[in-house]
Structures are given as structure tokens and as C-alpha cells.
Length: 378
Ligand SMILES: [Zn+2]
Ligand SMILES: [Zn+2]
Ligand SMILES: [Zn+2]
Ligand SMILES: [Zn+2]
Ligand SMILES: [Zn+2]
Ligand SMILES: [Zn+2]
Image (cartoon, rainbow, N blue to C red):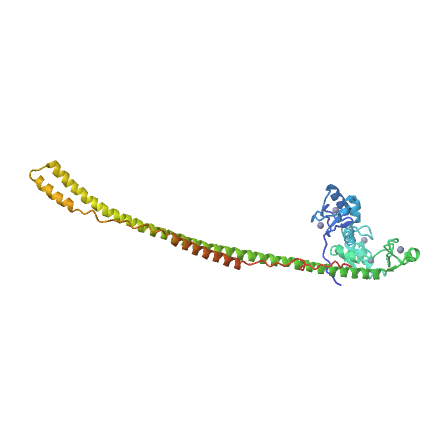
């Protein structure tokens, strides 16, 4: 399986140096062993400094010392190898062969840094002429880590060929016959590498499946949030529309009720006004005749007074104040108002019922069918 090797971040987020014994926290983040210990000692309930996830997975471990907890965390041996290779590529830039000139190249098999002249010699020698020599400036720590040979745990300069699962060591053929020939299941390093690669391949599949499921579940939640927003918007608009209509009904009702009241009182007031103006006319007649009589009494011209007495008596007697004047009784608009109110109540209830029916629901579906995660790690 060919995978693109990307440069990995080698700096510890706590000490900002390259990792030293990188420990894998339960959240998957890495910290140096010493950094986790001092981080945990500085805060009693310290979580991961990057994501705040707990460093102690099970509450039962709380009584343990920070050193105990940290040593129980797995070490990222791949990151260790990358850091080690990175160290080789930067430190000590003097040729490993002549100890004199600047090293510009590195042999990927011997892991020796060499100056250009020593590279020429390396390329001529029978034992090393097939070695892959590269420029120090272009080799990545990842590539160097991948090409470095496995060395025997006991004889540091010999190639390891075998792996003992009991002692968890790689070693040379000599060490096998001397120390591990009684050990069960000793395998060829290449076979063990294949098994490890297969196991990692299966892990990648499982994790990719989980990742996919979680992404789908998250996508699903996003879609549902959008749907909820749409329902919210739609229902808000419906409430506005209904309330606008209710307001219109109320406004029309206000106009009609006022008209009913104005019409009925207006009719009554007109009748009062008509009777009053008739009485005003009669009062005018009486008052002007009273003036004539008063003047005749005050002036007393002889014999006009005698003549006036007769005329004015006739005249006053002829004034007819007897005609009945009646104010039309007030007709209450209450029955009309009651009917109006009934109609308005019905219309408003109908609007509200229509709104209730039209209100959209948010679709409810349970979360359980969104994340069918199975814990089937090998
Ligand atoms: Zn650190
Ligand atoms: Zn974390
Ligand atoms: Zn040299
Ligand atoms: Zn070499
Ligand atoms: Zn050995
Ligand atoms: Zn062994």
C-alpha cells in the first residue's frame, strides 16, 4: 500500500521542542513524557492542553501518581524514530568519514553523513557502491526513518533479521542461536513487518469507516439544523401573516362599531335639535310680543294704548303654542353591536384555527440510527 508521507509536526505543544518519548493521550494527541507529568502535576484535573480531553481515562486511576499514569500511556514509537532521524539530519554537520569537511550527503543505508570526496570513495568501495546516497538538504526525517536498517538489539552494528515476541526484541542470527532458540514464535523480521502492516491496514479501514460514519452523522445534523431554521422562518412568517389579518379584522370592527354608535346617537341628537329649534322659534315670537306689550305699557300714548291693548290681546290669543313636540326616542345599537362582535369573534377564531393547521413541524428522527458505530477493533 503506497501512502504519501507528509511531513509530521515534531514539536511538543507544551515544551515546543522535538518530542522526547512522545506519549499518546486518550484523545490521540502527543506530548513528551516529561511534559505530561509536569502538566498533570501543575493542575490536579489537567486535561489535554490541546483539546481538554481527560488524560486519565478511567476515574479509578485518579489515585495513581502522574508518573504511573503517564507510563501506562502508549509511546508513539514512529514519532520517536522520526525525531531521531530529524536529529541526525541537523546536528553535527562534519563528515562522519574524514571528520574534517562539511557533510553534505547521507548514506541512507549506513546512516553516515559524508563530504563530497568521501561520498566518491563510498561509491567506489565494493561493499557500499550500491548504497543510496542522498543530499542532506533534500532528505526528510520520515524518509530517513523509513530507510534506516533495523539493528540487532545486542550487536548495534549488525542487521537484525529476527523478532522474538516473548522478549519483544529484534536481533541477528547469532543472537538467535545464543539467546532465543528456546523462545516460542520467533519470526523473520520481514514476516513480522508484513503482519504489522496488515494490522495497521485493518486499523486504517476501521478508523476510516468510523470517520465516515461520524462525518455522515455530522452532515446529517447540519441538514437537520437547516431544516429547523427553515421551519422556524416559515412559522414566523405564518404568525405574522395571521396577526396582520387579525389586526385588519379588528380595525374594520372598530370602524363598524363606531359607525353604529355614531349613527344611533346622531339620530337622537338630531331629533333633540329639531325640537329645540322649534321651541326657539316659539320663544322668539313670545319675546317680541312681550316687547310690544311692555313698550305700550311704558309709553302709554292716548288713545293708541286702548287700540293697542285690543290688537295685542287678539294677537297673543292667536299665538298657538299647543302643537305637541316630541323627541324621537333613542334606539340602542346594542343588538347590532352584539352581532358584530359575534361575527368578529368567529372570523378571528377561523384565522387562528387556519394558522394552527398551517404551522409546520420539525421532522423528528432519533440520533441512534445516525451513528451505527461498532466497536469491532481488531
Ligand atoms: Zn514536550
Ligand atoms: Zn487532545
Ligand atoms: Zn569526508
Ligand atoms: Zn553506505
Ligand atoms: Zn546480535
Ligand atoms: Zn526471546
